[in-house]
Image 1 (cartoon, helix red, strand yellow):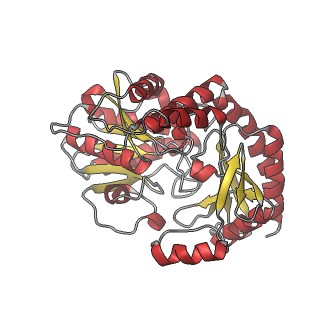
Image 2 (cartoon, rainbow, N blue to C red):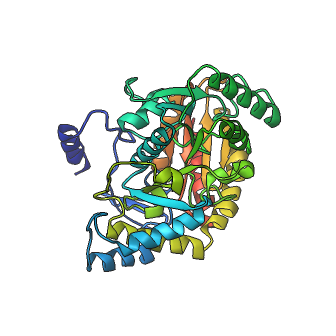
Image 3 (cartoon, one colour):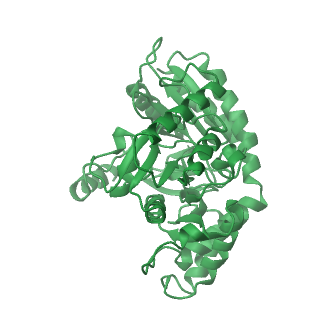
Length: 427
């Protein structure tokens, strides 16, 4: 049945639509932190639909909210008042940390970043954007134009002039040998140098922890130091929280809070986990920035009632059950368990990340050379052992991405770590 579906997939879908595994997997249903495939095999899910099933599969509180809303009305567009949309916007505005915040809902993180770029370039009357090397911000024309990861950038054509700065990867590049303070100082000097060679930019867009790039990040405080330089020049800071938001990093509710010394970002984008699988994205910005557009706009599907009902129920569950705290506690245990394994596996260069957002970087033993074949082999071996994980990386890197739902238990963390240990030792 799966081979038949694979043939049909290839017959009607694009060649560039990537599939994991030599024999691709059809996931048919899930519950909690587990999913099942079409052959009835059960897996512990440590990737959650790319960090999207954030809370749990088939969470009763969310499925009930979706079912009840579906029985009333699914959709009406933003041309009409929408109570669930207003209620979720109120909660997100309060949680964002941005003063006098306004919220606009989209259907994805790509669309959220597109909207943030529209706002920033309009507000600043500039099409120059600063972005981080090794970054990923989506698959649309403008989002690809600011993505600093060649593997996810199919064209160099763009409506934007993009300039890339250092800092998104702590342990590689020309500043890797420096301590944290010196690293930040060198990145700030690089930023100032870039600003001296260009017209005034609209914004810097940055993921507090780079997702597709392999869960890499700069030291805490890096973007606070950047923001001081940017604020002097009126340049906006866009925090791409599509993967880091909602408490996944454990230490903070938003990734930007690890860089909070200079205040919140001007614009924050979100998506993925808030809908627990439903298509929700969005932008938060202070009113002056959000209201800068001088033409009409709507969203047909952004903020539709059924997704807003799911988001409200999911956010309420997350807050009431302190899933941020669980990500910190269980994620910390999982990280240390993986580091203990890594010390005995020559292919592992580094275990990094925070909360339930962990990266395991693989290299050829005894070198700093990326080993994508090893990453693929571990992905396959983990699946054979009953564990689903992701992979990523950027320029000359390959990494495994470990990002379970935030309700992960200690026992499940131990089970997943044991499977991943076996997969790594199989190299």
